[in-house]
Length: 119
Image (cartoon, rainbow, N blue to C red; front, side, top):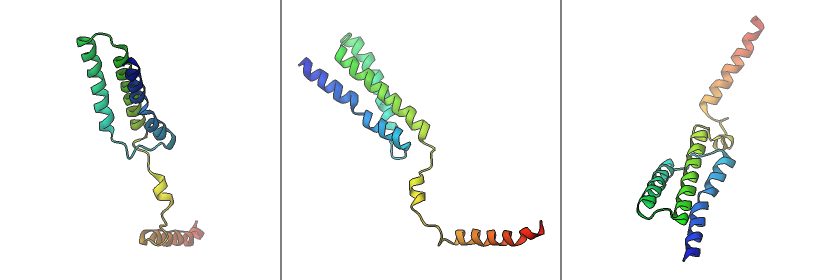
């Protein structure tokens, strides 16, 4: 049974790593639910306290909780680092040349070019 305990500890411990790596690689967190990681961190902290108080030092459980809490905290830091970044991938694929605002700006730019001879 101890082997099963270590297997689930490893699975739960590494389950956050792909999301953390993807968020760091893409520098995008707009599709991340930060409440998941806040609640996970709170849950892991409470689980550590409860386990130590009722069971004592259980290495398998505490390893799981501490590593899970560390990953949740890491994801929260990554989230707050990148949450205000503009999603430029959407903007780069959009053609604004037919928009009325774009035409207006182009016209204004031409008017400014005409007036440059005054300087």
